[in-house]
Image (cartoon, rainbow, N blue to C red; front, top):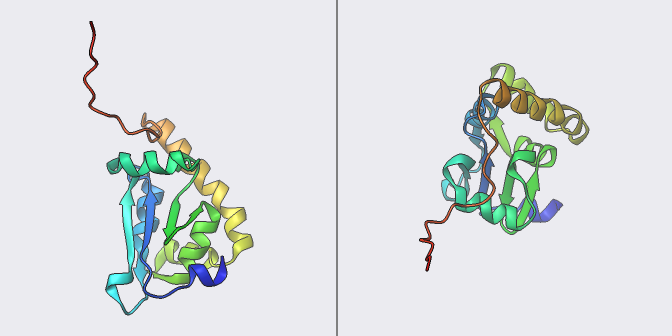
Length: 145
């Protein structure tokens, strides 16, 4: 993982749940530290990108199991994704800034991430929202004879 994830000039894509206030707040705090804006972090709300979610599902990556970071051809999910993000991007201050600094440490990410995912799932359940659909809906007309 090391050198491959630290390449400069490589675009990264972060796929998250845009209906999760915890996900939204964390993603909003991320600032790109790279001097080249062309090689930045592309933030994607999974609920607005069903084709991308379906592509992830085809690779056995369930977006409902955790945030996903794509760097080049490499895929990272959950705690691992947050650790890479925290090491490669600055964060604004406040509680999210503190959380971001803690997530730079892999062990802390592994301990903290399940709590964050549980909060997300609990929030979605209590607010009546559903999990993200893993398959892209296709507008195929069914031919019936």
